[in-house]
Image (cartoon, rainbow, N blue to C red; front, side, top):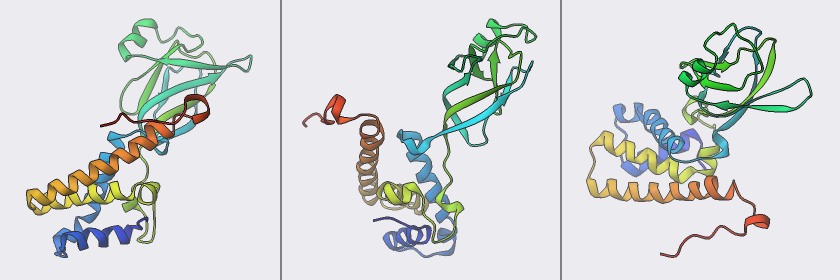
Length: 216
């Protein structure tokens, strides 16, 4: 089972038996809130992205991608064609390590300087092409056409549905027992995605055997 954007909106209305105009107008808000909860609660390869960028000579700053949320790694290729990983640190550590930005050298550390920029130390003496591996915000289902789908609406459809229903019922100030049922189903669906993202996606049976959960 999977949902297109239109199918998910219709399912929310069918479950809640609510077609009131203000409610319908807020359906995209419910869906985006559900996507946000999933994004912040589980690790999926879906939420990872690689991007190349350029560090310019004598400039310690590097622009963050517009969809950037958190870093996984930053690396560059040195003159010997070796990939060198730059270590992530607090911005105060980076600035203490290289208090004079005019001091140049091969970058050893980086930090998030502000919402739009990283800072590296030492300052690179020449242009460098870097590779940033990072957590990003995928495009919302609500940003596409009614017939459109996303990875979540295809592979995490139950979590997306029940997360949206929770938000819808909060909007409606619905009955607590129904809310509890939706929340239970959401947590169950979220656990399935966590098993995929934090166990199955990150292990291989040949090396570690099957993923085994503790008996209850």
